[in-house]
Length: 193
Image 1: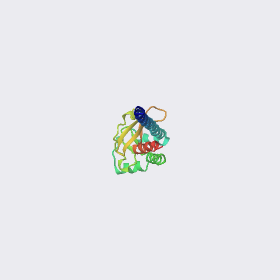
Image 2: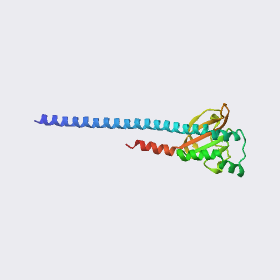
Image 3: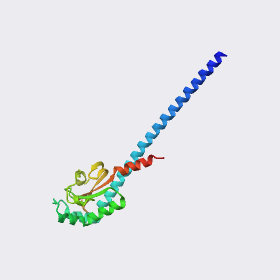
Image 4: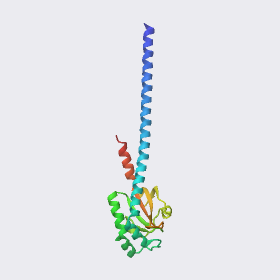
């Protein structure tokens, strides 16, 4: 009877150890699955925001109003002055940029000439001033999407050339930014199940 009680105790310890091991395996599996889900979801959301920013920048860059209006400032070395700021603030480029920002809820839409002078900007005080980011790729006719530190904060930024109709001549650049705060908020929302 002593040996049966001892065997029962051993069986109980073994059963407890197996149960604990199963719980550890299940817990680790769930943690790994959640981590992979989060990683996949972040990548998918990142690609979605890249495409969204790029699509908006392409639409703005292809707008006849933008192409026709920006050509006036093409390759001009602009000197910021109160008269220039007033002209740009009340002009068609700023009107298009403001409408796009409002309707699409992006953080910013900036339109610049090929030298980087801001022809449209959410901040009136920056009109006529040089953009701080590198626009050489877009000014050379190539699109790009980047994670950037901007004067507006961290953002997913699309830079697209404005090409004169019927030519390959780049007359300016459209820069569209989506706040990474919006991205992070959407990512957190997606993780809540």
